[in-house]
Length: 380
Length: 203
Image (cartoon, rainbow over all chains, first blue to last red; front, side):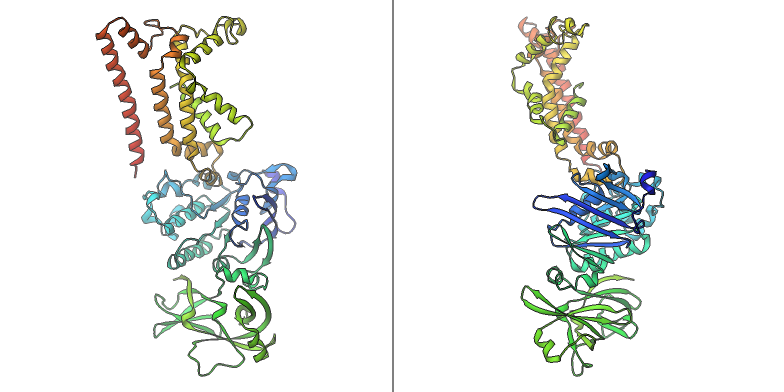
């Protein structure tokens, strides 16, 4: 153990170092990825090998070969005949179907990995705190068979946290939940990230989910790595965007509610940049994330006048990219907003590009409808 | 009852392990289920006979199985093994291996995972295996009579004793043993049922 602990991957001793291949039925999963970012995402369509990758990292795939290192410790090094068993990797795996222990109640599930937490070198979050953050206290004595899908997800997440995991592995954490429930679970996930600061690797086929939950993203396609980078940037790449769009791509704008007017909420996303969104259930001070589809945004080369649209975001046109969608060709106009140069994608036609003589570097306005905004996450 | 742990172990091996010759082992374990009990008894008799492969001449010491209560136990165990092993195997098969995987990622060693996840989840099936094994052992006749004989007070099992009493026309004796057998069987099955109910009804 101590020998493994002293080995460092060059430059990423504080992060993840992956160079693995796993034989699958139809193809082989092959991924090389080195990063020190603690908030990681894996995006790809169903069947791209995402779950295989997460199970490989957890140590549950016997056929995996190659190298896995996490924070300077070697988990897998088949060249040297080294394979750390799953119980010694210190991960918190939250599978898509939660996989709670059916013979234990909620408390029994939460405490299933507590033994490790006691012996782990790092401090594990107190059980009481986990119960509080995930609002699980009222469910403590419940039989897991009586829980709803969202409750099961929270218990599975709590179980991983209580075990003192050093790396959370979340497989499609929001799949199979309706929008209001997704919003709630998402809020829980963001709260967990802020409260417990556990590094996280999220796997998802949902472009919105992955964008909200990760700060560095890889895209898997047919078992190989197709792209890597910041999620907002990667998902807008011409070769990735068609896939991202098919999986529900939305621009995501986050900020604080500054006022409620006529039932709508004004959200400040940056100095001088505000968004007017449907305000039901919101109060001043709430932190929200709002989704806006690329197709719902209009590009204007001058400040809009005489329009009913409430959203006007001034920015700079950075890039125009030709892309193909299922319906036909589109041009992705990537507009940077504010000092942080937050990229926002508008899908427009080629005719529009010609008619307005759009060129990178131009000052433009993104126009949007309040009704097209979707509230994705909310924390009070 | 002796056969329960090895039977469960065999069931687990058959359910979870991939190895060459698994089908062969499977067939071999199931053999007593299909063979006439007297044939199994005869095989055991030849195995442990004076000059058999496991007899005193070859081993150098006497296992003292033939015509003893130990022999009766062995015969019953061999006959019960396939039922226990196959039922246990089904029980283990029904435990989702992914649950065991989750337990491992939570820091539980393979042994602890087996004790706290696999066993409790297979519990009901294992209980059924025990009841079936017990039933088979209780009723076992053919193999026992050949290996252990039917010596009153020494190797006479309930099944053998009832047979002897009927043959000899001791109806009262037979009825007494019958009542004992029914009571025993009832107690075991009812006990198992109560155990299962309690587990299922747990909050």
